Image (tube, rainbow, N blue to C red; front, side, top):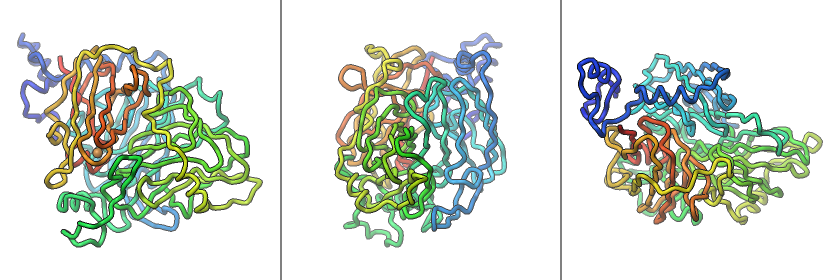
Length: 500
Ligand SMILES: [Cu+2]
């Protein structure tokens, strides 16, 4: 949908209308009118983010069909620059990032800069913050990057995320580096595109059958089929079966190997880019020192194994043990693994063994929600000015997933005003976990008091409630949605809508 054709008068106040109304001496927007992505308020918030002397980084990206080798498995898919993951973009905190995207895909696309508190009209949500980037056309994203951390980018168009369209976005902090020697970015994914069906076919099957599309199954013969379950996730672990899971685009049997010497401190930047799969990650024989979640620093905490839901990121420093060791990623509730090998140049490389996988399975798992924000990023503990409940439920008829009983409507929303302290209460009535992601802001999970981690994606387990607070300091229209791409496309999205 083109924003200029929106048919909800009184809700959307476009800049063109603003100017026209101002000339005519009319009140531009009635009270309660939306702050649109192209508004002066959004431009003003961006001016505040632009630092004097900021560097500018320019990148060109091509989204196109590609033949990719996953490690013994050749697939035809869609990717950025023909690579999987797409080439990392690396900037410094405060930089202005300019990305020219050329769409050579057979359908419209977009890019969402996951986790970045950027200007609303660059957030990459067609029908809400921009128009579709049509096949054969080019669009330039340009925005200031205010916060350091581990981020990634992906389309916000249908289920394109479940193809190969994702890449890391690393924002360096000039103060980083004291507690590690080197870093390693690991992007995790669940993979089916080009193997037995496309993500679009999976979504069609889900809608037809209500649940769990599996390849080769007759429609209507779903009962009795075993879908992934997880005690840790409190119920269903996924709706879709995947032939492969990947770490940095490679299968378990033919992994990426990076050189690492015993005693070296490696900062792992873990990114879960999967559509429907949570991962446990650990290094057999070593402990992880978790330092960041969703880009923001947390009080350092030791862990054997960490869990990442879809859309979550986690940074942890590991001291490389003797020999060659894998960073293992276990697909939660599924008997599938991926790995990146830390290869000691002085020791012959050995592939990970089943025993190492088993070793990790028995260890306690750190959930990101139990972390604490580092003092320097903790939000003040304040009473909220506004509280919004988001009741999560599904699947309903034809595989609908809902928030407050409704499927996504870009013209409907949860109103907030700039300057407010906002609380969102996620309440999961369904039998499956939902990684709930808020665009354009980093909220603080409320633990006892208000001291949980700063995050932009939080796991909400079945039957549980999670409260998050954020400062409404970035005007515009922002999605709050489930980062299971199939749940999101089946309706589980809402809009945190700045009004004036
Ligand atoms: Cu969900």
